[in-house]
Amino acid sequence: MAGLDRCDSRVALTAGDPNGVGPEIALKALAVLPPEQRNRVTLFGPVAVLQKTATSLHLQDVLSSITLVSAGEMSTDFHVPGQVDPAAGRSAIESATAAIQACRRGEFDGVVAGPHHETAIAQAGIAFSGYPSLVASVCGLTSDSVFLMLVGGGLRIVHVTLHESVEIALGRMRTELVMAATQAGVLACQRLGVSAPRVALFGINPHASEGTLFGQHDAECTVPAAHALNQSGLSVSGPMGADVLLANHATDPHDLYVAMFHDQGHIPIKLLAPQSASAFSIGADVLLASTGHGSAMDIAGTGQAKPDALLRSLRMLLGLAPLLHSQASVS
View 1 (cartoon, rainbow, N blue to C red):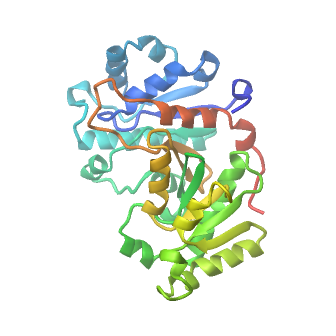
View 2 (tube, rainbow, N blue to C red):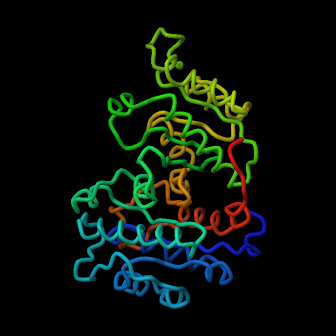
View 3 (tube, rainbow, N blue to C red):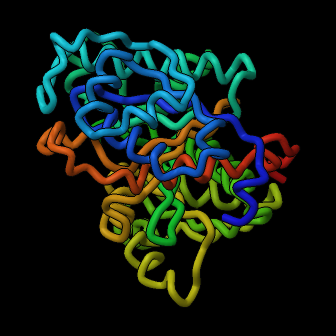
């Protein structure tokens, strides 16, 4: 992105699950950034674990060159790379919460959160269904007000529903929810520099229900959502089958796709950008970006983790100050 070095965005970076690759990729990403960008990043996480990780990677100079905020404190006695542990899950949530709160206070322009481990968080007794739900909770919003948008492989895909069974997701699928996800996605695109995004809605059922041959769901939900969104002045196509829309992306590209379910949006992104996708929590006053991959417990502590996805998210938010403070809105 042009002009990154001249931007003044301040970003809060969190270590994610300390038993996963989060601390490693955070330090490796910071090591790649030039000093003028690194100086605008503050790292939130368990200090003892970050110091131990920096030593193992020979990146003590990187850690000493940045502002470090102790959050989600975890003794190295309980730090076992690759082990799913409730203390590590709690640490990821505490560090992310502290970063989001600091962003809300105006100390930062955005948050980049390291990868979490949902089982570890669940074992800690914390209700959690992904970073969007955490952003909603900290910002005092309902859980269906903040959505996940994946960016990678030339695609931007916002998800109407996320970490829940298809049965539960289908049960709460409403025109208003599809519209809210789309509008949040459009505003996020505008923040990312796409002023008038072309949007396409995936259908709920195969072939967007083929009229009503495969059910009434699209007729009752996505079709009226598309109509209302177009009436509001947005450029929205569909609903159509996700397979058709994605197959035609090369010849008829859209700036934003709206997936109804988790796998509709995750599969194409992870196929095209398995290790480099960014995940945005959108719809709140705090813009949070994370990685499109998990905590990679199988390689945690081995030094093999690549920081590509986290680095991409950092670079995007570091270059967004004028857009984050603009008055772009959904028309």
